[in-house]
Image 1 (cartoon, one colour):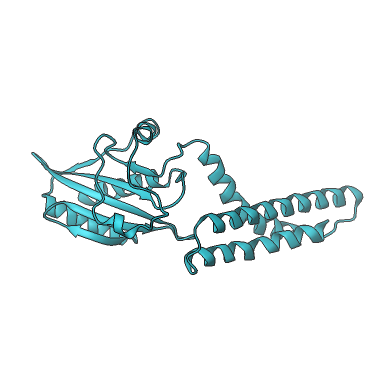
Image 2: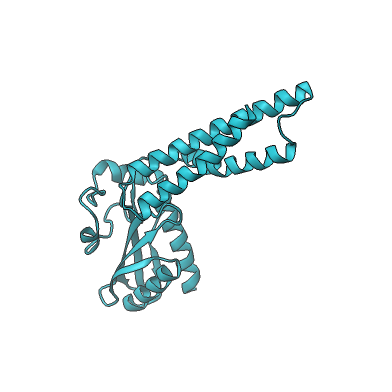
Length: 239
């Protein structure tokens, strides 16, 4: 049993690596790599279960199939793969199945250049009333940022911060207060598009932003997290 446990755990990791290569390097559409990752997580989970059963049975009979140190190592190797997947699944049950989020649900910023960067099979940037309603309910805390800077100054500062966060600027117009960028996830390399709208106010300007995933029905809250992180950093930067 323990032999099968270790084999399963060690088999899962090459599958994940192949899935990442298929998506990031070979350009395979995301459904297949995600299916492979899901299979790898399942395999690793079975391996962990068999490992625990083997160690418990061995401990009760006085004949451990492998040392506790080795068992812990294999357990951790499998858990590193399974835990994030379990966390993502748990979170997906708590957030709405949407992939487009804005600080202004009533009048979200509009992507101008981004549509030409998206392939035909990728998500549409059209927002339905249902999606907007789910966003209001789940992400009511998201709001624009009012700052005592001119529109060009606020836009330039937003661009600098976006670049410091590793985002690629695709469109920038400081005078118009318009900025578009691409944020790429670290592991799988999923690309999410971000647009900023900076408008003049009596006290300076107001920044609104919108983040939308190119693929997938649900972003598991990633776009809202991205907006929160940027807004917090932006507010701290302009103080």
